[in-house]
Amino acid sequence: MKIGLDTAPAALRETYFQHLASVLARYAPEHEYVIGTEANDGVDLYHGFRSSLPLSVHLRRVPSVMTVPNLNFLRYPHLYTFAERLFVLTLYRRALRRAGRVITVSAPAREELSERLNIDPSKIEVMVPLAVPAPHGNPSQAELEHVRRKYALPEHFILMIGTVESRHNHQAVFAALADVASPAGVVVCGRRTAWSDYLLGYARARRIAARVDFIYELTPSDLPALFRLARVFAYLPDADAEASVVPVVEALRAGLPMVLSDTQVNREAAGEAAAYVRPEARGEVLAALENALEDVSWRRTMQERERRRAELFSEYAVAERLMQIYTSL
Image (cartoon, rainbow, N blue to C red):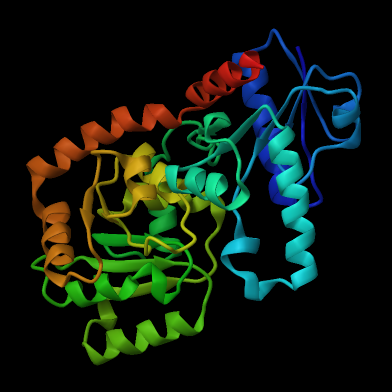
């Protein structure tokens, strides 16, 4: 097959499909993959990412697959004008109904597509995302020490990564920190926001500021080392927050014990390889963090489960599932 892969002005999408094409070429080299302007020229199948399919795909009735990253224009209507929402909604409905398969990343997203856009649920596939490229080998001891010194990291710390806003419940970890038996600190990675300033004030008021560090400008290449230096990964977004599975996948790859909010998206990503809590239940957060920090047997069990779970997010697994979808069309 000659498979056309979408591209778009956004750099993230271009990078995603370039990575996707290289992975498919490595694990399914019997097919040809093209990206960009030439992707519509005589392809046997087209995989799109935008809210519409190319006209040539429609006219030639080329079998198509669409990946839907989010429905933010419906979730957050205040960010768009009425005309913008109507335009995107019309494009999406038309493209998704014509597509042979629709790929999304979670069961809630699948239900949202079916209910809000009236898409046949039988053609919506829930598939783990490719996430970020897997690092080639673990960071060396020298690299780990370099990252530790670069960010002045404590010996033991709880790592939190993601948008620093109230819906990600950093405060629940801060509140538990005052009572947890371990002397571990908390390292929060994310751009500076009004909420991060509030959290810093909260930490000072609770006299735990010395155990809290913020990294506002993180070098992406330092992430693998950061995940391996941490003692625990805490990720507590609300169920309705715009959450990503990418940090969970990185923690799985690193074998880093996790405390996650009990949401469907987190459970689909981590399965049984994490402790789940309700962020508003202070006792649950405290108990889970103490287990994750100090219980050696629990940590060993979770790390073994994470090793097996991480295989679902491997490049090979993603390529194999995509080829099953492609060939079904």
